[in-house]
Image (cartoon, rainbow, N blue to C red; front, side, top):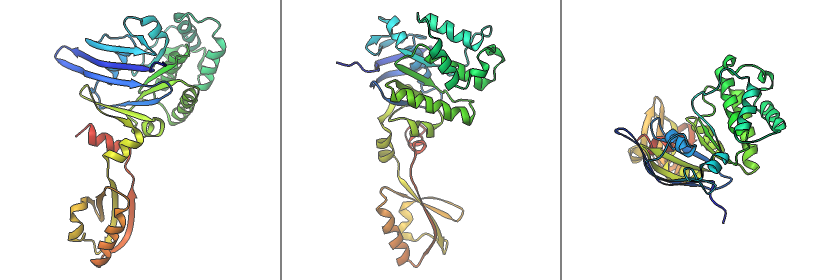
Length: 299
């Protein structure tokens, strides 16, 4: 039986009086592109740190490709690559030297070809012999991505990988990561750019105060938790009484109505015609992952 890429069972973690994780249960299958979302302080980085062996859970179990992160930590570490949120680097090595040393930590020799490909894919070739301390913040972020991938881990965890990164690199990075996913690598992403998660990830978990409050496919979350918004400019600028119960506010001349299905639009238009109100402009706004996030996590 093929083990999950990541298996998390009833994980608890406390820092003093703060309960960072409260019985998290989560399974990520091999080959998934998975999003782990939540506001600051929700427990995302704590969960990743425990998974990577940088912190210990108070209770519960975690495994990477069937390898327990505590009992079988060597194999678990070899199976995962983590891009941390913080910029962590050795200031006294060049980019290429750092990647060679990182290969050595995993016992990998003759890794030159893969290192050169990483440098090229992450637009670091021109900086390969520069000291990391001399690089810009965005360049340092690219180096962290290269370090996480240098041992070709089957499971890749990206903790805010595009924070402070320019648009060009963001697009090239995602093209590269998509290719790795298509080749069979499991990708777990945390990001505050929710449009990235919606575009890239097949399944989403949302954390709030150390607990998972939503876990489903991206499509199901969009369909289940948010309403369609109908935006109307009317003449005269008055919403008929019969439609007041659908109103979710007004932006200047624009009336906003909340609908559960697209089929309800025709009923709204019919009610407007019967009331003698003309539609001067109309827009149907599809809900996005940010709407779901605001509904489930910040409420």
